[in-house]
Image (tube, rainbow, N blue to C red):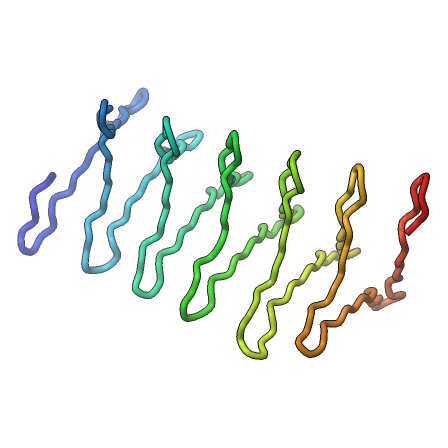
Length: 263
Protein backbone atom coordinates (compact mmCIF):
# COMPACT_ATOMS: atom_id res chain seq x y z
CA UNK A 1 0.00 0.00 0.00
CA UNK A 2 0.98 3.63 -0.33
CA UNK A 3 1.70 5.77 2.71
CA UNK A 4 -0.95 7.82 4.45
CA UNK A 5 -1.40 11.40 3.24
CA UNK A 6 -0.32 14.46 5.15
CA UNK A 7 -2.64 16.98 6.76
CA UNK A 8 -3.64 18.68 3.50
CA UNK A 9 -2.98 16.10 0.77
CA UNK A 10 -4.20 12.84 -0.70
CA UNK A 11 -2.72 9.41 -0.33
CA UNK A 12 -0.72 8.07 -3.24
CA UNK A 13 -2.38 6.23 -6.09
CA UNK A 14 -1.63 2.62 -7.01
CA UNK A 15 -1.43 1.25 -10.53
CA UNK A 16 -1.26 -2.45 -11.32
CA UNK A 17 -0.89 -3.07 -15.02
CA UNK A 18 1.04 -4.81 -17.78
CA UNK A 19 2.93 -3.07 -20.56
CA UNK A 20 1.69 -2.30 -24.04
CA UNK A 21 2.54 -4.38 -27.11
CA UNK A 22 3.04 -3.25 -30.71
CA UNK A 23 3.09 -6.71 -32.30
CA UNK A 24 1.09 -9.23 -30.31
CA UNK A 25 -1.06 -9.55 -27.20
CA UNK A 26 -0.28 -7.63 -24.05
CA UNK A 27 0.31 -9.51 -20.83
CA UNK A 28 -2.51 -10.69 -18.59
CA UNK A 29 -3.06 -10.14 -14.87
CA UNK A 30 -4.05 -13.04 -12.62
CA UNK A 31 -5.18 -12.53 -9.04
CA UNK A 32 -6.01 -15.62 -7.03
CA UNK A 33 -5.78 -17.05 -3.54
CA UNK A 34 -4.29 -20.46 -2.93
CA UNK A 35 -6.14 -23.76 -2.74
CA UNK A 36 -6.81 -25.10 0.78
CA UNK A 37 -6.93 -28.60 2.23
CA UNK A 38 -8.98 -29.02 5.44
CA UNK A 39 -10.03 -25.37 5.27
CA UNK A 40 -11.68 -22.68 3.18
CA UNK A 41 -10.03 -20.95 0.27
CA UNK A 42 -9.01 -17.37 0.94
CA UNK A 43 -11.35 -14.54 -0.05
CA UNK A 44 -10.57 -11.63 -2.37
CA UNK A 45 -12.00 -8.28 -1.33
CA UNK A 46 -12.04 -5.12 -3.44
CA UNK A 47 -13.37 -2.13 -1.50
CA UNK A 48 -13.49 1.59 -2.22
CA UNK A 49 -12.70 3.69 0.82
CA UNK A 50 -15.29 5.82 2.60
CA UNK A 51 -15.45 9.57 2.06
CA UNK A 52 -17.34 12.48 3.64
CA UNK A 53 -17.48 14.94 0.71
CA UNK A 54 -19.10 14.56 -2.71
CA UNK A 55 -19.93 11.26 -4.35
CA UNK A 56 -18.39 8.05 -3.14
CA UNK A 57 -15.55 6.60 -5.17
CA UNK A 58 -16.65 4.50 -8.15
CA UNK A 59 -15.67 0.92 -8.96
CA UNK A 60 -15.47 0.03 -12.65
CA UNK A 61 -15.04 -3.39 -14.24
CA UNK A 62 -14.65 -3.07 -18.01
CA UNK A 63 -13.87 -5.81 -20.50
CA UNK A 64 -11.50 -5.14 -23.37
CA UNK A 65 -12.29 -3.46 -26.66
CA UNK A 66 -11.45 -5.29 -29.91
CA UNK A 67 -13.03 -6.52 -33.15
CA UNK A 68 -15.33 -8.53 -30.87
CA UNK A 69 -15.72 -7.09 -27.41
CA UNK A 70 -14.34 -9.04 -24.49
CA UNK A 71 -16.76 -10.90 -22.22
CA UNK A 72 -17.41 -10.04 -18.59
CA UNK A 73 -18.37 -13.01 -16.41
CA UNK A 74 -19.45 -13.21 -12.80
CA UNK A 75 -19.67 -16.78 -11.53
CA UNK A 76 -20.32 -17.86 -7.95
CA UNK A 77 -18.52 -20.86 -6.48
CA UNK A 78 -19.55 -24.44 -7.11
CA UNK A 79 -20.93 -26.42 -4.19
CA UNK A 80 -19.55 -29.97 -4.38
CA UNK A 81 -21.69 -31.25 -1.49
CA UNK A 82 -24.51 -28.71 -1.18
CA UNK A 83 -25.76 -25.47 -2.65
CA UNK A 84 -23.74 -23.34 -5.02
CA UNK A 85 -22.72 -19.84 -4.03
CA UNK A 86 -25.02 -16.85 -4.34
CA UNK A 87 -24.61 -13.77 -6.51
CA UNK A 88 -25.95 -10.64 -4.83
CA UNK A 89 -26.12 -7.29 -6.62
CA UNK A 90 -27.46 -4.50 -4.41
CA UNK A 91 -27.56 -0.75 -4.94
CA UNK A 92 -26.34 1.56 -2.21
CA UNK A 93 -28.46 2.70 0.71
CA UNK A 94 -29.37 6.38 0.96
CA UNK A 95 -31.07 8.73 3.38
CA UNK A 96 -33.48 10.03 0.70
CA UNK A 97 -33.44 7.30 -1.96
CA UNK A 98 -31.44 4.17 -2.58
CA UNK A 99 -29.37 3.84 -5.74
CA UNK A 100 -30.81 2.45 -8.96
CA UNK A 101 -29.86 -0.88 -10.54
CA UNK A 102 -29.62 -0.77 -14.32
CA UNK A 103 -28.86 -3.83 -16.48
CA UNK A 104 -28.97 -3.41 -20.25
CA UNK A 105 -27.31 -4.71 -23.37
CA UNK A 106 -25.09 -2.34 -25.33
CA UNK A 107 -26.05 -0.17 -28.26
CA UNK A 108 -25.21 -1.34 -31.79
CA UNK A 109 -25.33 -0.01 -35.33
CA UNK A 110 -27.03 -3.31 -36.27
CA UNK A 111 -28.91 -5.51 -33.80
CA UNK A 112 -28.45 -4.94 -30.08
CA UNK A 113 -27.57 -7.85 -27.82
CA UNK A 114 -30.15 -10.10 -26.24
CA UNK A 115 -30.90 -10.09 -22.54
CA UNK A 116 -31.65 -13.45 -20.98
CA UNK A 117 -32.79 -13.74 -17.37
CA UNK A 118 -33.47 -17.34 -16.42
CA UNK A 119 -33.03 -19.76 -13.55
CA UNK A 120 -30.94 -22.87 -14.04
CA UNK A 121 -32.19 -26.32 -14.94
CA UNK A 122 -32.53 -28.83 -12.09
CA UNK A 123 -32.92 -32.59 -11.77
CA UNK A 124 -35.75 -32.17 -9.24
CA UNK A 125 -37.17 -28.71 -9.92
CA UNK A 126 -35.88 -25.56 -11.55
CA UNK A 127 -35.49 -22.42 -9.47
CA UNK A 128 -38.29 -19.91 -9.05
CA UNK A 129 -38.09 -16.35 -10.36
CA UNK A 130 -39.60 -13.37 -8.55
CA UNK A 131 -40.00 -9.95 -10.12
CA UNK A 132 -41.38 -7.44 -7.69
CA UNK A 133 -41.01 -3.99 -6.15
CA UNK A 134 -40.32 -3.32 -2.50
CA UNK A 135 -42.87 -2.58 0.19
CA UNK A 136 -43.58 0.92 1.47
CA UNK A 137 -44.59 1.98 4.98
CA UNK A 138 -45.55 5.58 4.11
CA UNK A 139 -46.60 5.99 0.50
CA UNK A 140 -47.16 4.08 -2.71
CA UNK A 141 -45.03 1.13 -3.72
CA UNK A 142 -43.12 1.14 -7.01
CA UNK A 143 -44.77 0.05 -10.24
CA UNK A 144 -43.62 -2.57 -12.74
CA UNK A 145 -43.57 -1.72 -16.43
CA UNK A 146 -42.87 -4.28 -19.15
CA UNK A 147 -42.61 -2.72 -22.61
CA UNK A 148 -40.97 -3.54 -25.93
CA UNK A 149 -39.35 -0.72 -27.86
CA UNK A 150 -40.96 1.35 -30.59
CA UNK A 151 -39.87 0.48 -34.15
CA UNK A 152 -39.30 2.60 -37.25
CA UNK A 153 -39.33 0.61 -40.49
CA UNK A 154 -40.44 -2.59 -38.75
CA UNK A 155 -42.93 -4.15 -36.34
CA UNK A 156 -42.95 -3.55 -32.61
CA UNK A 157 -41.66 -6.47 -30.57
CA UNK A 158 -44.15 -8.94 -29.10
CA UNK A 159 -44.52 -9.84 -25.42
CA UNK A 160 -45.20 -13.50 -24.70
CA UNK A 161 -46.04 -14.90 -21.25
CA UNK A 162 -46.30 -18.69 -21.30
CA UNK A 163 -46.59 -21.35 -18.59
CA UNK A 164 -44.35 -24.34 -19.27
CA UNK A 165 -45.70 -27.77 -20.17
CA UNK A 166 -45.79 -30.58 -17.60
CA UNK A 167 -46.53 -34.31 -17.71
CA UNK A 168 -47.77 -34.87 -14.14
CA UNK A 169 -50.78 -33.37 -12.39
CA UNK A 170 -52.62 -30.19 -13.33
CA UNK A 171 -51.02 -27.71 -15.68
CA UNK A 172 -49.49 -24.58 -14.17
CA UNK A 173 -51.93 -21.74 -13.62
CA UNK A 174 -51.66 -18.16 -14.82
CA UNK A 175 -53.27 -15.54 -12.60
CA UNK A 176 -53.69 -11.82 -13.30
CA UNK A 177 -55.12 -9.93 -10.35
CA UNK A 178 -55.60 -6.18 -9.96
CA UNK A 179 -54.79 -4.51 -6.65
CA UNK A 180 -56.96 -4.48 -3.57
CA UNK A 181 -57.50 -1.31 -1.51
CA UNK A 182 -58.72 -1.14 2.08
CA UNK A 183 -59.39 2.63 2.00
CA UNK A 184 -62.99 3.52 2.81
CA UNK A 185 -65.23 3.89 -0.29
CA UNK A 186 -62.20 3.55 -2.60
CA UNK A 187 -62.32 1.54 -5.83
CA UNK A 188 -60.24 -1.57 -6.43
CA UNK A 189 -57.67 -1.57 -9.20
CA UNK A 190 -58.98 -1.89 -12.75
CA UNK A 191 -57.86 -4.50 -15.28
CA UNK A 192 -57.84 -3.67 -18.99
CA UNK A 193 -57.19 -6.00 -21.92
CA UNK A 194 -56.95 -4.02 -25.14
CA UNK A 195 -55.82 -5.10 -28.60
CA UNK A 196 -53.60 -2.87 -30.69
CA UNK A 197 -54.81 -0.02 -32.83
CA UNK A 198 -54.31 -0.43 -36.58
CA UNK A 199 -54.21 2.10 -39.41
CA UNK A 200 -56.40 -0.43 -41.22
CA UNK A 201 -58.06 -3.07 -39.03
CA UNK A 202 -57.62 -3.14 -35.26
CA UNK A 203 -56.19 -6.18 -33.54
CA UNK A 204 -58.37 -9.05 -32.28
CA UNK A 205 -58.91 -10.13 -28.68
CA UNK A 206 -59.31 -13.89 -28.26
CA UNK A 207 -60.15 -15.50 -24.91
CA UNK A 208 -60.31 -19.26 -25.16
CA UNK A 209 -60.55 -22.07 -22.63
CA UNK A 210 -58.13 -24.97 -22.78
CA UNK A 211 -58.54 -28.11 -24.87
CA UNK A 212 -59.29 -31.42 -23.13
CA UNK A 213 -57.68 -34.21 -25.15
CA UNK A 214 -59.53 -37.17 -23.56
CA UNK A 215 -62.20 -35.41 -21.46
CA UNK A 216 -64.12 -32.14 -21.44
CA UNK A 217 -62.65 -28.84 -22.55
CA UNK A 218 -62.15 -26.12 -19.99
CA UNK A 219 -65.06 -23.92 -18.91
CA UNK A 220 -65.25 -20.18 -19.41
CA UNK A 221 -66.88 -17.99 -16.78
CA UNK A 222 -67.54 -14.28 -17.18
CA UNK A 223 -68.83 -12.90 -13.92
CA UNK A 224 -69.11 -9.41 -12.45
CA UNK A 225 -67.96 -8.70 -8.92
CA UNK A 226 -69.91 -9.23 -5.72
CA UNK A 227 -71.09 -5.97 -4.14
CA UNK A 228 -71.97 -5.12 -0.54
CA UNK A 229 -74.92 -3.23 -2.01
CA UNK A 230 -75.21 -3.59 -5.80
CA UNK A 231 -73.33 -6.21 -7.78
CA UNK A 232 -71.22 -5.26 -10.77
CA UNK A 233 -72.69 -5.00 -14.25
CA UNK A 234 -71.77 -7.07 -17.32
CA UNK A 235 -71.82 -5.19 -20.62
CA UNK A 236 -71.12 -6.86 -23.96
CA UNK A 237 -71.38 -4.66 -27.03
CA UNK A 238 -69.96 -4.43 -30.52
CA UNK A 239 -67.81 -1.63 -31.83
CA UNK A 240 -69.02 1.59 -33.38
CA UNK A 241 -68.53 2.04 -37.13
CA UNK A 242 -67.89 5.74 -37.72
CA UNK A 243 -68.35 5.48 -41.52
CA UNK A 244 -70.56 2.42 -42.07
CA UNK A 245 -72.00 -0.40 -39.95
CA UNK A 246 -71.37 -1.25 -36.33
CA UNK A 247 -69.98 -4.70 -35.60
CA UNK A 248 -72.22 -7.77 -35.59
CA UNK A 249 -72.76 -9.99 -32.53
CA UNK A 250 -72.81 -13.77 -32.76
CA UNK A 251 -73.50 -16.06 -29.80
CA UNK A 252 -73.69 -19.78 -30.53
CA UNK A 253 -72.69 -23.20 -29.25
CA UNK A 254 -70.28 -25.42 -31.18
CA UNK A 255 -71.29 -28.27 -33.50
CA UNK A 256 -71.78 -31.67 -31.88
CA UNK A 257 -69.37 -34.57 -32.27
CA UNK A 258 -70.18 -37.84 -34.07
CA UNK A 259 -72.16 -39.34 -31.18
CA UNK A 260 -73.54 -36.34 -29.32
CA UNK A 261 -75.74 -33.32 -29.50
CA UNK A 262 -74.71 -29.69 -29.73
CA UNK A 263 -74.66 -27.66 -26.53
